[in-house]
Amino acid sequence: MRVLVVTNDLPPRVGGIQYYVDQLGRGLVSAGDEVVLLGSSSEGADAFDRTAPYEVVRERTPVLLPSPTVARHATRLVEAVGADVVLFGAAFPLGILAGPIAERTGVPSLGFTHGLEVSATRMPGGSAMLRAIGNRLAAVTYVSHWCEEHLRGAFGPVPDHHLLPPAVEPGEFHGAVSGDAVRDRHGIGSAPLVVCVSRLVERKGQDTLIDCLPRWRREVPGTKLMIVGDGPHRGSLQRRAADRGVSEHVVFTGQVPGPELPQHYAAADVFAMPCRERHRGREVEAFGIVFIQAQAVGVPVVAGGIGGVPDAVRDGETGLLVDGTDPDAVADAVGSLLSDPDRSSAMGRLGAQWCAREFSWHARTRELRGILAGLDGPATGPAGTQSFDSAPV
Image (cartoon, rainbow, N blue to C red; front, side, top):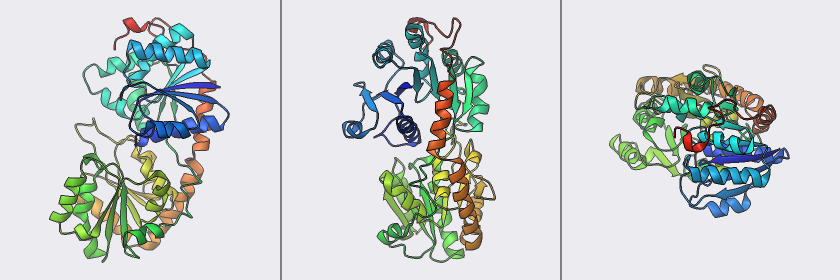
């Protein structure tokens, strides 16, 4: 199968969507498919592109927009590589290009969704845009049941609808991974440790973890907090730790290379990210790949129970879902696991078994290939084959 991927979301940019698109692209190549990515430019792209297992063609712009120029370039690539299918790394907004591509080549398109599209339904004109995109796609995938529940109606009856959650690489994330080297590097030793891996943005809830740390240290002496990642709120989080008198007990690692992530998860006694909705639901967690990464290495999790997160955690079995806006609930949940190592270990073991069984990229790639093979053709009808110039973009 020959696949053209059109996306703004690919490495070396860091994020869950970029990781998702890259892993499925690699999986398709490993399965014997030919994959070409049409993407936007970013710093460090040349180094990534030289080692990627698929061919990358980048436009000289930091953001691909659904413009006539991008439509023409994508169409030419479809013809040049003999693509059997076009895959949009994010259906919104680039999926609108499925119409002109299908009209000129007859090749069907599939669009991934990641949660941003739910936010679009709450913006003026967003629902109409999603319906226009749905009318042009042959299939849409969703990372969680929550996403499907909120988007199936928005995309309408034309495309096929499929669940395609994120996954982990079992050769990297597994129960035998050791976090000892990470603990030694940061002087943690054998102290109880809560870890959060995420971009440092307000909705992820690292501020709540800092607020809870004094209580945890009273109840479970010596407890420390490790915040892995970087982002615009790093400075404010560091100031918050100073204000709470816990600076010396909070480790900010900054951005960690991908190959080192499993060891950072494994260093934890508890993984916690009390995510919460912001801006009236325009910012929400559509799945939470960090939760399955933590569970895969055998660490129990405490998660903000919003959006699609319940798909990523078996509440009461592999972790605990809490209200991320309630600091007392977060403190209670994490504290209960820190103070009961036997319960934490049992949850961790079950989480590792569950993730090994349900969340592998190999299985997810197999599911994607089945979806792609089942695409009969482009969306039909006037809306499905409308030319770009008349499309409502």
